[in-house]
Length: 340
Image (cartoon, rainbow, N blue to C red):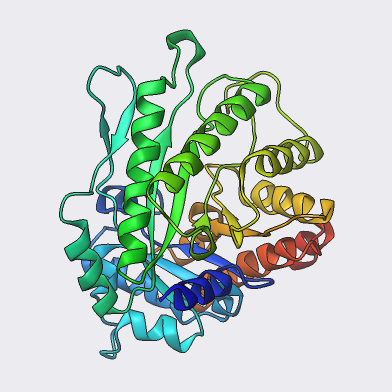
């Protein structure tokens, strides 16, 4: 079993490939569809995801994180969406957490729920074709309220580790995602300190839960200032600080790190990844696990109209190719201009 988990984890971070996060909850996908004037019906959600899974952009995708609804859906021709992903050479995955809920006695902080009954759900998802899973812990920063607290951060790290252990027991590779949010007005050094604290706590909990590091993938935030911070950072500074904190916190046994975009613009997420890979000398693979940064362009191009499917597929393929180049350290702004 350990060899199987390790092989899947390695494939998830294969050279020049990354992970498509298509696991938006019902509420999140409705917001995205509202922005493009599309009703969030099951059929529309299915059609949108099908167009991506049939796109040439899947050449650059190692795995796809699905939502409970999506892993059960069939394409218009009756083919399961899981089969479309597998046919494209990608690995189907599944989001298994139940979302972030207010944490008792920690005002303004959340705890991610979903551990109850998880073992049974993982078995069902494995039978449906999932070979990896995702659980997201949400860590906010508010220096005026002394957030994050030790209580909340420790609880979220513990839940992440328990989830990871249950996944591995079910022959499923866990994506471990402690996301330090980029909302707020904090500076880049505050993001660094909180991320360092979060990562060290998470790996301590993973050790206590006997999680095999070779059979997991880490999905962290990049070290960026808050969106409301008056002092924004250069691409070089983001890359240097992110790599520095990862080297200080992430054991070399971890096969790869697939970054979340966390609300960055498409091109910023690509440029930051590329700059980190170009630094070189890294003990693990670096790649992407983007949701909005891969999907904003195709959603806008599609706008719910069948006649726009090819245009949307081209937009998805372009963003996936740009991030593939970044994961290889071969991207440049010129590549964006050529395609424009």
